[in-house]
Image (tube, rainbow, N blue to C red):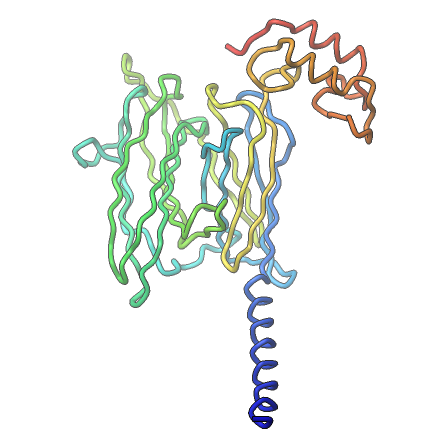
Length: 326
C-alpha cells in the first residue's frame, strides 16, 4: 500500500504539470479591442480596432469576430476581420453564398421597404466530430449603415453540409446603391466566446428605389487589417436605440476582449431616452456640485466639460428642454 501511494505522487504531479502547461497554451493569445471614440452622434461612423498577439508577437494570419449589441442587448453588427493574411478554413468552410428571391432564385436587385433573401451553404471539414455552428449575416446599405442582422445555430455532422435560407427587411430609408451582405461562420457569438471557423463570406447586390429604380455607387464600409491588427467600421440607422453599446471580440485559443461606447442624439438627453425633460434635470441634480473624482461625479452630467457639475450644465438642459428625437 505504501509503495502504491509513493508511486502515485509523481504521477499526480506530472498530471498537474501537464494540465498547467496546457491551460497556459490555451490562454496564450491576447486580444485587445477599442472604439476610436467613447461617444458617437447620430449617423456617425463607428470604428473598432484592435490587436491579436501570441506570446507578445502579432498573429499575422488570425481571424477575429466582432459583435456589437445595443443598450437593450440586441445584436446590431457582426463581422469577421483578418489580422493579416487570410488563413485556410478551420473545420468548416463556406461553399456558397448568394442573394435570391423568395423562391431561392438568384437575384441581385432588391427594393427598399421589402425583404432581401439570402442562401448560405457551409460544409464540415471534420471527418469525426459533430460541430456546433453559428451563421450570422449582416446587411449594409450603400453608405455603410448596418440595417439588418440575422443569425442561426445548428449542429453540422462530420463532413456534412447545411444550407441556411433567411430573409431580412430593407428599411424604407435605406440608401439606394450597391450594398453588401456578409456571412460569418462561428462556433458561437463572440459574446459567448465563439470564434470564427473561416474568413467571412460577402455577396453584393443593389438596393433600388421602388419609384425610379435608380441606384448610386457603393461606399459601404469594409474591414481592413495589417499584421496582427484589425479594423471594422459601420454606421447605425436613425432608428437605432440610444445609450450604451457593448463591443465583443473573440478569436481562437480563448482570446477575448470587450469595450463600450455611448450613442446619443443630444448630449443634453443625458438618460438617452430620446427627449430632453425633467429626468435629465434629475440626473444633474444627483451629481450637482460634484467634481471629477468625487463619488457623485457623473461625466454625462458635465455637459460643458469643465470637470464639474454646476449651473452651467443646468442651463444647457434648460435651453434644450422639450426637444425630442425625430
